[in-house]
Length: 450
Image (tube, rainbow, N blue to C red; front, side, top):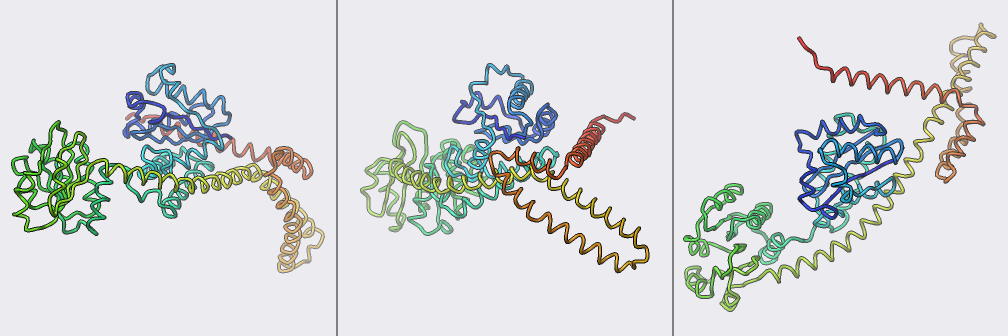
């Protein structure tokens, strides 16, 4: 079995390509089931976000797996593969495992170290698991990825420093005030940046949010989301009197507030300090405002410095996580190697128990006068002999499968103990179970007409 990842993301494909490969939540279950029924595909998970589309699969052969996954994409989206093949990346086995770990930890995200992707990976796994599209390998791999990501975020500072301008503005405000609980923050602008700022403020427990915009309706839509107050530009003087912090992100070619505008409201503020953060380009607030007493003005360059410093800090933390990831890759590979041993161990135990039971039956036949208690003692101690004889061979076999020549080691082990028939019986039993499950699945898919 092999692990295969085929996908595209914000690094390999522009948004006009990514949006063509969005599954949509209402269709994703059907996509998972369709992919699972393709030849070569044994298990599958689809991770689908605004920045990435990735198909994680367990396949019996890499070359056939690649072929059928690409064919699935081509047919599901109705797009000729020549139009998207150059945007895809393909990762196999250890590289695929490492890729999942990096994605879950936020190291492959547009914003380094972001935590939202972890929830998206978990949801994707649980959805596939609920559809019985995962098995032994992915149940282990995705749980290990989630556990690793949680540990990475709790044991490092990867997600604790702002790396977006709007969030950096909030971080700056937190350095000025210990918290926002009893503070009034005025947001100038109801665009995407204004809404993102309001979201960060609400998440940080801001007491009062006032959204000011030229169009009242746009201000109202954002204010209502965060239990704030919406005002038009005509009410800006009132908002400035109430404000502790003003964050401006209006799209305009000229200054919205001048030094004179702020001077006119200072008297009414009764010497309360006013902090203004201008995150717009071009700037909304005239730089001369910073000359006024009890008024402090910061622009986007001040915030960019914070963001760049934090990105460097995150990069340093990412190096720590890379070490953790490499350790987890080796741990998973080691576990994966033992999967080949499990059927052999099972076959050996089955054969030894069969020999043991047959020996006990012979004893019963030869010595019919034995009591039930005496037979229990014979069974117990004869079984102990069998287990002790198997103990060290099983340990050595587990150790030897880490060897690059593990296939030869297993073959030698099978030959020495004569386990061919037991393994064939296991294969027949497994094949029967798989066929029965497939028949049951197809029966469930047949519509019932009354």
